[in-house]
Image (cartoon, rainbow, N blue to C red):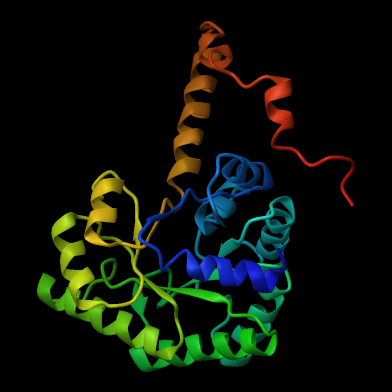
Length: 280
């Protein structure tokens, strides 16, 4: 598929009766495995990419580093890729548009774009974030692509709300404003309980993305509620890292090899997820 077709395909996946499940990846082999397992699209996780390189999340790696990894992931699969763009790596509209153009040049079909700043402690005003979403949409149109914008609302993460009702009201207002500004899906990250999601589904008419956590409603419940998309953020990466930590502890203590060798993928198993030939 061309990049244009991939973007159209990704957008259409938000408008079916099936929950779009996106197990977030941080490298090409993960993306290839997601595709081989039959998922229709791939999404990156900024935290997983940064942490896998030894840095904290929050635009602590260079934009060029993130773009290189995203480009590698895009090249590794034939299905659409949505990239976690964080806050766009720029405070200015001009810088945001330049960075968006560079990201589109990697071949992505969609992005996550968040509305918090100062390490996630502050929320941009709704009008400011609307202008930033509009700026991204303008760049995408110049590239003749309908980039799928998943607009993240971080209201559940920041302080400053006197009541939970006020916090939910802010999420609803932001979500509806972001759709008006040109977003295709909204991502009220940080709350996944059934009661809250039912409220959000009733008051937000656009496609909704939910983050899967230990407290999130089950995948079946998400589909029943009418949630359109679920992603896993850095949690798959961190789960695998926990296993690596346990393996290191086991072998350091002169334990047995079972923790490593049991249920391991073989050399032949891995080949399915690798590109042929040398790196170009």
